[in-house]
Image (tube, rainbow, N blue to C red; front, side):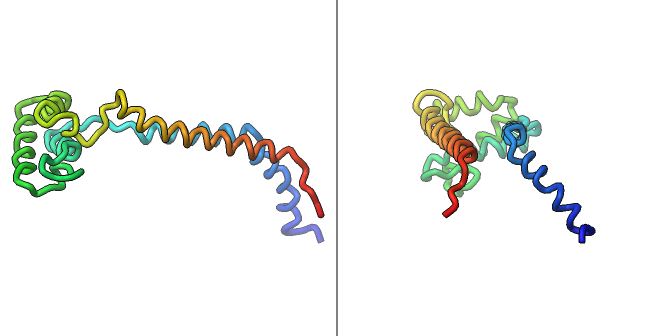
Length: 152
């Protein structure tokens, strides 16, 4: 009885062979990298309200522990929110506002890392460890694929 499901099963080894090929894995990895790169790019906020909201979310509350001024109802946060809105309305760019906050409260005044020095290292080391683990796992699976299975 060769009708029905027999035709589907006949093409299955070729599908498995294609999916397990190096080209398929490289294409999958390249697609993942491209999608992650596209997803990590954010256009700058254009409206004053959007800029104010963004800045409120990255400026640390002066009286709180790890809260932004957008999340806090402390009087110092409310004052700083009004100042940020005034600075945006006055035409200050984001970098100038961030510099003003850092000048007043120090480098801990922002909830985002500085991107250099020790801050960069603290973000790059875990990324490098995860990448090395992925390469190691891929290498292990690649070598294991070539060895014949032992049948008891």
